Length: 215
Image (cartoon, rainbow, N blue to C red; front, side, top):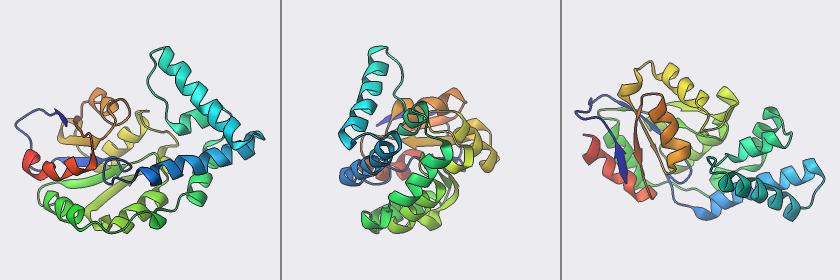
């Protein structure tokens, strides 16, 4: 865990969580999400699944070779000519959180403890409906006051637009907001650039340390 905090912390900060890889640990589900979208891209481009997957890999490797930040899957799809409307539709139609996620009582207790002093929000690169179903499956939907999804801004993290939408919804100064996620360049760095604070976690189990750290 790495902390990008400016003590003393306000006890009423707004905490904005990433979802996949932050609030739950399910590598099979995360992999299945991407595979479902690659299948749609393959059909769109009239390619085989393997050809579409290789095209995505080539783009990622070229960016890495040029020391560019990792691109979101949505940004890669946009670069290949897929519209925002199709990206959102594919995710709504083919990502099914309830097939993979179940209630997590320990996570419920941790987030409920955090709500004693903080409002909780979610910023995700999936559509809001997918995020809502995910939080409901985990049993934590009642803990969140705001959800910023792909269909709110039509931009994917690390683009600043989802973070600005979160700040507008929270109606708080950036320094009173803390973003929690598992990827520095995608989740944390954009928030810091807008004046927010951050907590970078290595694994979802570290979320359970937050009540002690923040309160």
